[in-house]
Image (cartoon, rainbow, N blue to C red; front, side, top):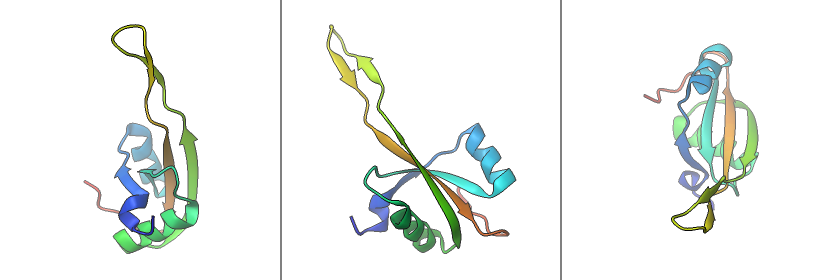
Length: 94
């Protein structure tokens, strides 16, 4: 897992994530569950060529879902990272 594209999967663009971007210069990413904070920081700095000040992560358990009959399934576990950039730097995501 040394490739930066393995660590960052997608950008989360929700109403709350947009408010974090506008107010605190923080961006929210869905990342690999095996990626640590240092891996995420290096990947964002290399991909976007910006200075990262802080990385906060949160693990989420996949929800239980019922399949066709009485079988129970589960969505995948995932990890979210909130990345704070240096003041004055922005990402053009859209």
